[in-house]
Image (cartoon, rainbow, N blue to C red; front, side):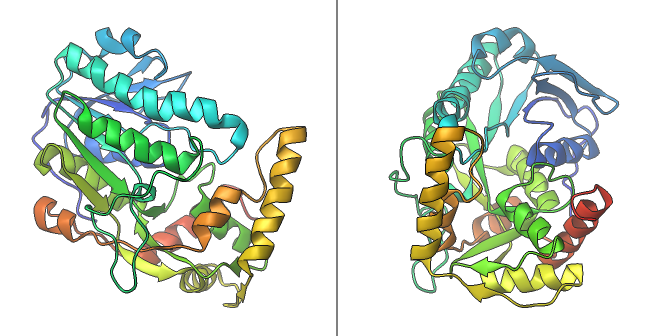
Length: 331
């Protein structure tokens, strides 16, 4: 993987989300590039050598201005990733207001430029054989501050901020360190546990999480202010993705197609359960709705303008399989 290189001491970077899946790999890429990093955390965290930590909350961005002073750059990867309807107020507060707040705090503190992590959810689905590009914005009708709607709104807020901002739109990252796990990671874990996979006929773009991290550093060094860059790799149907995961895990390469109406009905029943009992949905309706879409995209702009060179997605899946097994997700 082609980690960007910068001269040691290239400048202090204020990094949010350093303990998250993407953010932890961005931290590694920054350190490998010679950057000094000041990381925003909410609680205790054993930081790698050379990383300064700052305790704070995106919902109180004004309090972060002193910690931002002296930093040349901000990379903002933090977000609340949840499909639970009970989290929607917090999703709006963290993902939307938190993004605009940290950028305003950065402006006050004299930060030179910012890179904000968006999502391929902020792209329109592919049409026919044409993958989405950076000019294809999603429609803001996902529902009242669902996760995907919040990422779209946050990116629009970021690009309107009165400070130089570049956005990076990861597709579906896979690789080691996906502790939650993400929806794509959960597909891998479910297959490792021997659960029969079902598809809804959609598809997605898969990318190694390390490549997404490198894209953030490249965007910091070479990205143009006001521009968005897709960090992805290969477009796969869900059935093709299942087969790659099965191959990496030594499981049978078989899937079955689940009618959307059945999946949606099950998700609505599960949503009713969550409203009564609380907790996280087992069958997120938001995920079901996205699962029938062809979320294909092109990273040609990042390749051309940033020098982005994604590595093998199949190898990334193999690294993810090993990591889940080594860390007890699947005996």
